[in-house]
Image (cartoon, rainbow, N blue to C red; front, side):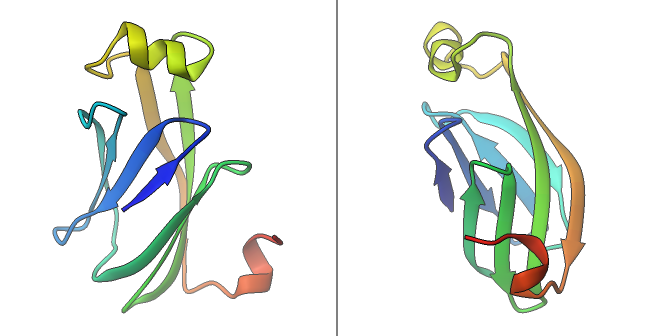
Length: 105
């Protein structure tokens, strides 16, 4: 599980190959199907909206699209605790990547 400070979202990978996205009130906003198994580490890069995971099958980079109905994002969370104003979509997922190929810290 990892947390995005910019978007105020939690990301969790489950054993049934799903990516769950939770808001600050821990209400499930989205369930995205991914081919991930036994994820040991994950991190969300706010600048590029990428979720980077490492596990048994290698390194996966998931490009996400995060949109809010209200701006700033914290206002969307306060006005709608259920998370109806947040949309998270899967843009692209790549697997077995090398560090230099995806992002330079």
